[in-house]
Image (tube, rainbow, N blue to C red):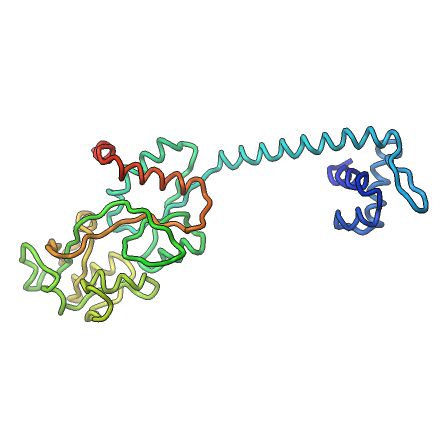
Length: 302
């Protein structure tokens, strides 16, 4: 006998009608009759008595169905329990990141998450300038470390940290020797801008415009930090980075100069608003813990 035959027999014992049972089990009535007959032949006794106008359980059939119901119930419970165990042992959190130095800010948070949830396997995916939002929407990652500003109603953002910005200046430019720059110093310079697919809010922000009403001069269209650095070094373009990125990259031909009046760069953890993942919720809780306990953040960083 097989499980499906048992389920059919139990359903038939409730309906006592081959036509209605066949409809519920999504099988032809003739196929249902064949399966019940096979089961009875294997058992060596009749479960059902048939007549021209009714179906009813035999005494042996009543006892068999009683135990079949318990067996199927136990099987369902065991299956669900094993499914939950399997899900727990295979829990994964897919983290997308853009390689701009964010790791030095997120490391203590991820470290605490790993200690708190050792059963969750972390999978990291490097994202580009133009596919960070798309990776979340397309379910390629569960969360993504994203630099704000980004406005998208589909996403939820958890504040991670903020840090000063620096200007990336061509080494041969007259501004390269300045100890400090202001936004006004760079407004007329050509900028390396992120290519199609990047959040539209990035263009005015990274080119030091207060809003999108005035467009920057475009020195190059880039899709990665390395392309941006090359545009600055070899094409005379300018760009701005979070200060952590200037510590990560050392490009000949580029000078990193602090900006005294640029709004700080905010790093956030982005996730879909309706994401039901317990792993995502757990990471968001860890982030909130860090925000409420600065001393924990300092401890984890040292």
